[in-house]
Amino acid sequence: MKRKFVQIAALGLATALLLTVCGGTASAAPAGSDTETIRVGLHYGTGAIEGLNLLNEVGSGYRFGYYDGSNRFVELGSTGKTAISVVETMNVYYGTYDNYQSYHTTITSGVAVGEYHLQLPGSYASFAQAQAAASQYPGGFAAYIGGTYYARVGNYTTRDGAVAAQAALGAGAQLCGTSGYGVSVVETGTSTILFQYDDLGQGTGLGVEPIQTGGEKCTTWSKGFLYNGGFRFERIGGGKLTVVNIVGFEDYVKGVVSAEMSTSWSIEALKAQAVAARSYALTLGTKHGTHHFDICDDIHCQRYTGQTSAGANSNAAVDQTVGQVALYNGKVAETYYYSSNGGASQSVSVVWGTNQSLYPYLTEVADPYEPTLNLKNTWERTFTSAQIISKLLAGNNVSAPIVSAEITSYTSAGNPWMITFTDSAGKSFPVRSGRVYNNLGLPSCRFGFAGSGSGQPAPTPPSGSISINGSTQVSGVSGLYAIDGNGGLTALGGDVYVVTDGGTAQLGQGGDQSQGQGSGSWAGSASAANGSITFAGRGWGHNIGMSQFGAKAMAEQGHTYQQILQFYYTGITVGYT
Image (cartoon, rainbow, N blue to C red; front, top):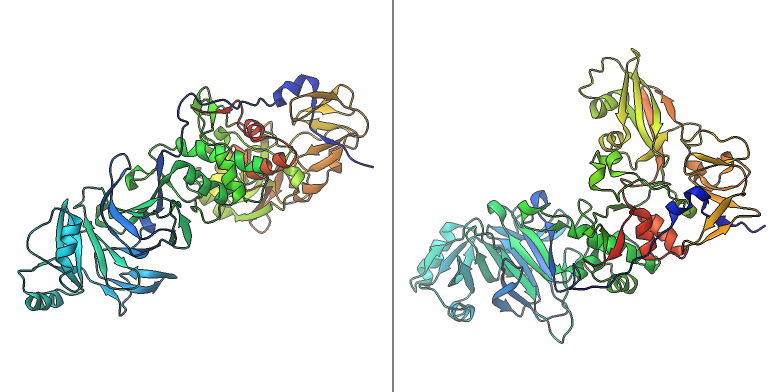
């Protein structure tokens, strides 16, 4: 017999599940339009780099310069070379280190770029003049030091080598180097310097942009990734190279959508991801201000891989939502998202202890959509008593081993709220679930303990009934209505199958007849076995905001991206600022 899958709600609860669609029209330039740029950190902090290769396969070389305070590129010079490397002005050697073939200080090879140079007398008014003077000598190049052009010759790894070359060159050349902020542009794989730049610590850094030809948007390969836009290289505090991709905002969003979500998914899911990524980027503020960029390219902010994985589907999703953001009371919402919730999202106050009134749209949502995918997203993590005490209960004066743990309260969406640990002396330690998730590094916030049990926190319903929204018990279809994708209500009748946290269940069979993800069940309590407690759960991520797999499921069931976003972010609209 064909099963009928629906969302159901007692009539009194129906209005809570209605989804409002708000398209909106722009009265001004939309936030994050492609006329704007964003600074994306690629290599910084402990990941700063000594040398980075750039390859322009589309254009005809690169321009050198710097970015002003409005991120506008100011050109100082150029080269027709399409394969270049930017290196710090120390002795660097071309070769492979840490699986990357570029220029490094930690190896030696026959291809070296030295830190000592010879400078011809005087200064010049332009790159062309400095280049013309330098080109009269082998190894000559133009340099821009502290706002002035100079002509320099050669590069030497030792001072003695530079002094010997100085005597041979004559021409009044002076031995020189650069400050700890200097960078050099070289032809990749050679010792040939093409341009040298030193801002003397003023914080501008070297800007590099591909030269566009034929009207085609330029792209640059770097370290296995393909990027639009340009790059800024800065030696913050005289350290290694901090590398920033300065790129059009919508090109950035395309690079996030294709990195965060499969481009083969339904376009409505990809549109939801585009709006969420765009909104999140606009709300980060000065998170990376100390490294002089707006947002990083990793999950610390949101994953970004340039145009490497972008496809027609993901690009179309961004193009069709250009400038659209999630709004709450007219302000852009902080649209956190994650991979999978295992059946319910969670409030930001539970997970991170954040003031919930500041984020009214980041509340718990019981999710009937994601479980329909039957994901293989169950997990287990085992911790010894000593680990639990050191990671979770430090400062609680625990004097005896932890012997048991129990979920003593749940949220209305069925996620754990309070977990109580008990030691062998009988002393109990209640801990908020978000702290357990964060301090123990659990994969998600939807968990219990390994062992027998349905994993359902609500009281076991009487035989023949099913729990709705974690509380209301129903045993028949009388008085119940299905809510369609447009918010319409239809009275239920006949054989009805309900999407539950454990999978699917037929109304009248009871909650213990669930299928699908029910194999990922857990117990509400556990005793230490061999001195350890094993946590078990479903989902992947912090459970705050939108489930990406939930978005996939909703899109496959015919929901629009606006409906997806408004389901996971309570009370938001989708429009323009």
